[in-house]
Image 1 (spheres, rainbow, N blue to C red):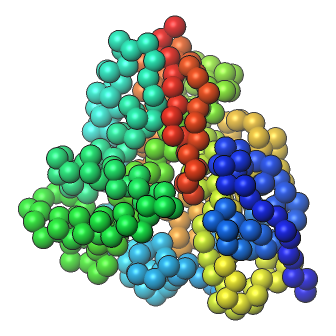
Image 2 (tube, one colour):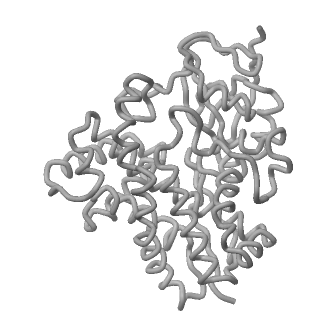
Image 3 (cartoon, rainbow, N blue to C red):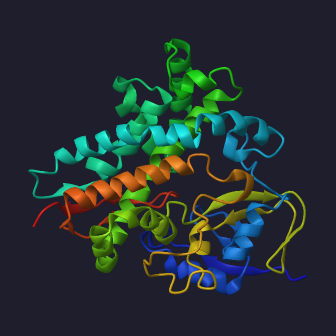
Length: 362
């Protein structure tokens, strides 16, 4: 069995600005050992079928970071931790949030009515999901700016470790002082690993949806025929959310795994103890699964932005609802919304925009 190795080095800023050339190169090689943006080496799995296989492979462990956080555990611990969280994030509960999310979206967009230009990220994409996840969890309103700042710092490699420590202390203090209520924190407060779980839910429930809204709106403004189709037929917005998640989702580089045995993926042997990156972004642009993958096109096959198998994102339904409401409300209230300047991309492992200015009205 061959062992693939390649001297493929990722230039961090060029990857975060446009990862498409890297995706194409990785898929052409199949599973291969490459240099990652942080200077480490990892096996990258990038073809759609290989990614689906890897995400379900029992010998590719999610326990790449110690600490007992849900997305870094394997069964049976993962099963035990996930069950109450999945119950707290039930479809019924998420659907019941629609009126609240619609109000938050409309309140934020009221500020756009008299503005010549706005930054989508700071004025809409960031405050919408942080408000929603804090409402759902029961985080006090006065703490939400602090939570948003800590979440942003958790996404930056240079501040991640310190921010996690401060975030964990904040969550621990919240658990000690918060009055019980009709919220997820109250529902989960007797569960094990609760501090780690809440850190994950707050960061994942906020940061990834910021990028869904920011990346997705940018892609939509650059695909005028699709935008026009949504204006003419708003019932297509849920389909558009799926396509925008596929086209430019937040996990471009991917999710980490470690091989607990020699593993064969795509006809290539990955040695035991290897670090592995499963590239969701590359899989979502695989032309063998998605014809013309670099084009925004409604009606595609299912994507892997939310993962696959036992680690499928527990907050996927909430993210979809937020996306549907965000794009639907934006298009309804500002049908002539237009790009005002070239956007600025962030240098962080969650692919997203630092700044994205638009003109709400002509």
